[in-house]
Length: 387
Image 1 (cartoon, rainbow, N blue to C red):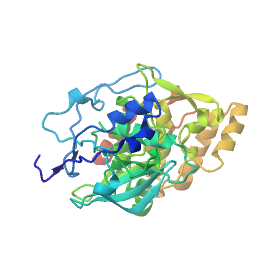
Image 2: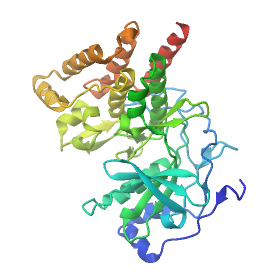
Image 3: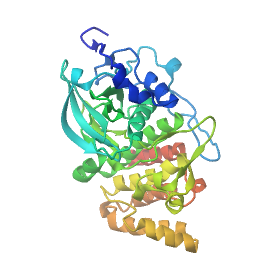
Image 4: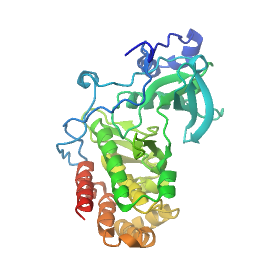
């Protein structure tokens, strides 16, 4: 890599500016790991790292299958393949110019930023600037960087490290990411993807989710707003999973963690067990993402319609008391499929409905694994080619 594309960031934060990160041992460790003395890779157009055979993470019954995504660590990089490098923690005013706002999440405000030296634009997620925002948000952005800094998959958003605003608060921390064209919500609703394309989109998201799970990370907020759309050189859409603000790392060899139900997924993508649990803790596993994946697949198949609507919570709570949650989900799927799936594809609707139903199950053990869903999706794509 020549000097024209490899520019070092040598400007360090002062001791006073670092102080908020050292309030406890955990933040200190995170901060040190987040600011290696290195430059960052400027060329966003490099080809993705090739996937290799590896075991994919199963769910509760610990089933594994071959052909899963590669699990990356420092020792398993593909020789000769370019890798994104973290940006040294540096003042954003020294290198990057903050431009217009792109969007807003639960704890992050995303802006477009431009590199003054190269003219390259990125997306940068900052903590919400309001004073009422929790200090934990700064730590969440740092944690998100830890989860994503080694990611090298074409369907997971790429990150380039942490930057900071010139102040004495963790609220100045930002996560630098590749700039996307938009999110899947607007792409799906505006372009009304053809039947074959909608299966292709689901396949892309599943590939990214399989990679995340293989790295023992649960996303826990999979929804159309958190799937970004980038453009390939031929103009086709490349979908990338983003926003790991609610993600958790599975400890050791455990297959799940316990979290309050209200902290799991966005409302209309939340599994019934988490919805019923409310503020009480509930077991969260890879199958939690599978439930949300089913709702997301319905969104793609229907051209931008939600499977579960505003009254989902009250219906689940009522059905739980009567012991008929699964019947409720089946009824909702049948009704929404009739309302939203396009009539000119009636012959192919059963495969779509079956796929969604394999994900949207009341209990986690009834949901298919991501590897099994990938096989189901690949078969659907092959059938489309034959016909």
